Length: 113
Length: 113
Image (cartoon, rainbow over the protein chains, first blue to last red):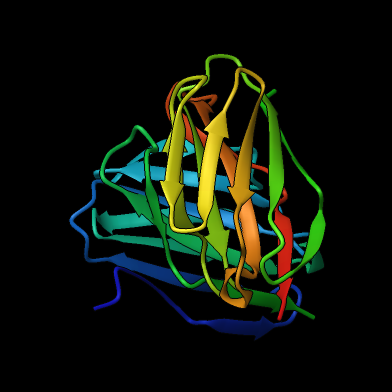
């Protein structure tokens, strides 16, 4: 069974479009995260939710809006996509908010043309 | 702001040739230092957590050590399957007052048979 899963694996879209990425974890963890990995492999946290409550919101454009319908799911919606949004987006989870050992999903490669 | 710097950026070794990867950090109030392994097209996979200077952890051919300013990942007699990008991360306080991981840019390790 996959611990942290993301859909889709690949996403190619045009500038200005709106898209969503979904994440699910079956580990029973309380905390979930979204990370962005750029072309230089730099992995940077964007958001974190603990039991459906937003606990980390780094400097991210308002076009990015996370939603957590329950503690097993964390989705990322992106409005008005820009070229600079092209990256690999990783979802992760950890047992609690103390950001200890995190389990990462396989990533979603977003390409904006 | 928390900073994590990894060196070298890339390292090519012959099979069986031991070496070390470096992770230097500046953070206010280190809670923990993490090492992850990332294979191409996959999410990072947890290797070790170190919490205090002088601590060491081992797993197969890998040993991680920690001082007050840096961590080393020593690889002994590596095999081709050890080829991957190794990421270092520090656990510190986010702007929301919660803990988060700040990652370095990684060392891309290639083991030549």
